[in-house]
Amino acid sequence: MLKRFELGEDELDLIVKELPKSGVIVLQGDLASGKTTLVKSIVKSAGIDENVSSPTFSVMQNYGNIYHYDIYQNGIESIKKNGLFENFFEDGLHIVEWGDENLIDMLNKYEIKVCVVKISVLNDKRTYEVNFA
Image 1 (cartoon, rainbow, N blue to C red):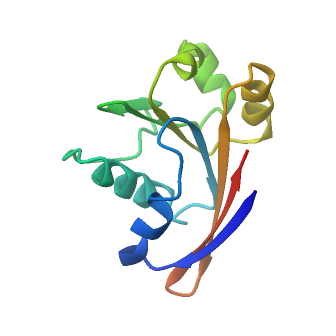
Image 2 (image 1 turned 120 degrees about the horizontal axis):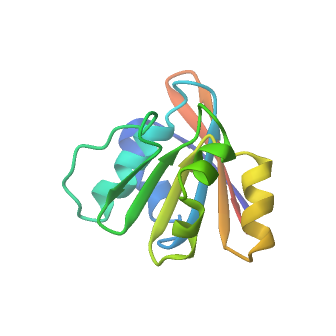
């Protein structure tokens, strides 16, 4: 099922309440499209009071049972070479910035539930196309 949202930063709670609370969310979008901002809203809505930043160099950070990945630099290889793929089998919510079709295909191969969010900039708002698998 595909849902589309057109939201400003102060309206992100509208999409956050629709997103799954477990499984994998793959975030796709250009640089500065708002991927990390969405992760911040998800973490905040879970009642976790932590400073969320993109784990570009560490590849993964966790906030309680929310796991935040950034695979911009090396794609799925970042996850493989750091031994992080096994994390996707753990309980919790796994959010992957810069996930691509290779990652989605691999997750589907192991029957791991995936939700894909495509983010694009629209003036002072963002368009979120959410594909609930």
